[in-house]
Amino acid sequence: MRAIALNFSLKALSAAVLSVGLLASANAALFEDDEARRAILEMRLRVDGFQQSNQRSVDELRKLGEENAQLRRSLLELQTQIDTLKNDQAKLNGQNEQLLRSVGELQSRQKDIAQGVDERLRQFEPIKVTVDGREFQADPAEKRDFEAAMAVFRSGKFADAGVAFAGFVKQYPRSGYVPSARFWLGNAQYATREYKDAIGNFKQMLADAPGHARAPEAALSIANCQIELKDTRTARKTLEDLIRAYPQSEAALAAKERLSRLK
Image: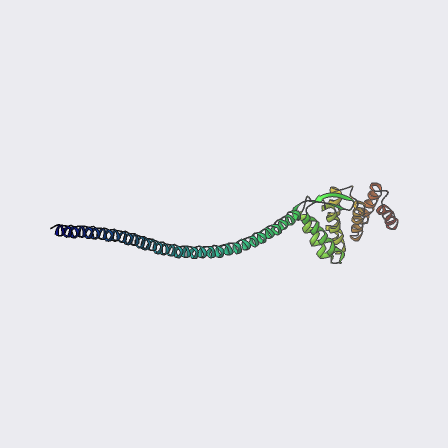
């Protein structure tokens, strides 16, 4: 009986130990499954994190690529704008150079015009002249016309010279040249045997300018015209008046000689 009881006890103890062993094994297996699950979960989390990180990297790379492409487009547009600005600047530079040339040409023309105007104005400005010892102001046109008439007279074209001097006296009646112009007009008329007209101009010259340097010559010329007209008595009186009025002149010496021949 005791043996049976002991055997039974041993079996029960074995069963208990077995149960404890099984329970320990089961607990050990359960623990190992939890670790594995945690490891798997961690791995999954890591994988998910990596995938998310990789996706973010892909998205960022795509975004960077898009931004890079946009930047390239912007750079191309900027380069195009720069090229356009350079072309516009080149055109403006060309236009500016042309404008500067035009301004330079305009200034040159204005300078030429101003000089031309000054020269034309100077042609009308009175100038100081001296003729037959007399100094006076005369317009350049007067000087030109008087000298032109004198040039004709010196060339021996006395008829043309008479026309030139007569025209001068008519055109410039108040000119300081008039006494000299009348003197040479009378000489031109004497040369063409227009004695009466010559006497008229010589007398007018003496009436206007009795103190003129050529006044004695004009008086002598009047006497010569009167002699040519066979008016000896009048010529003698003219010569006597000449000697009294201009006793120190060369014309007075010539008048004395003429008087001696008229007697």
